[in-house]
Length: 386
Image (tube, rainbow, N blue to C red; front, side, top):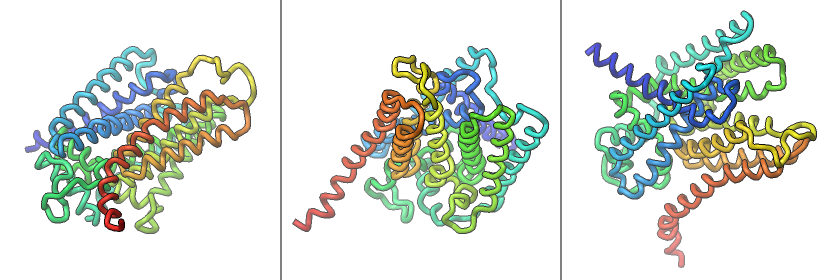
């Protein structure tokens, strides 16, 4: 029994940490090696992970009448493994071999600040498991994961009663419960254990990676030592807010600490700071003064390609979390592009157009799919008034 538990723990570490981290080299391979930080690679790997599952899951859900969970699981394992193998190949090719780890760089003071931020993370992760309690949304989301894990049918049974039901359009495209069921199959762990005992630390880690990247980019114009200290202080502030911010049941801090497995928690704690990190990266592509850098005929840089890759991945990951997340994320990214166009300095209209195009394509496809799914319900609802 102890050996079985160790095997499950090892499998969980492989599928939840090692393979997503290696897969992160797929979108990050366009970046210069000095820009490939651990937090950026791990965050990019999970955004790719979520996007792959969403792109596979929605067509299988709709075309196979909610019966294709096994097919979805096989395809997902194959693509995630292929992405991880490519990432391992990129890691082997890189000169530095290991990505940058900010908290291992700098003076003793900087390392102590990062150690304090890491200690806060461990305390919050432990609290999210030790003080976990039954939540009303468990009756839907966790039960949906358990039903899919047991029966191999997706959104086939109504979690509140266990009876057969039609496809719930409100939750159909947000496949996070199905992703947890797939992860439970891959790791050999019961979905309830996986969701309540393993996912809190994972989601807090993803949240801290997103905030760390945003902080690193926010202080990019400072001296490296100053930037490292300010980033560490920023992460300490984030940890304090997460620790003491649950002043009501509606705050993001409450959700990320006590209900991190819900899509809206991941949206607020991971995707929103990741969106700001994407916009800060895009802003760094626009020079403050006129010059050769940033001109229309300049060759596309690795940073630009990274933004054009990560933006759509971010929106697709939002589709997995909650049905409103991709609309909010697209609006936020487009608002950022507009502000960059209106901001000071030499603008690059072609660059901003390319960014807008990459952000809009997944959003337009998602909106069309939503209209197609909702149209029969709207006709039945309002048809009686004619």
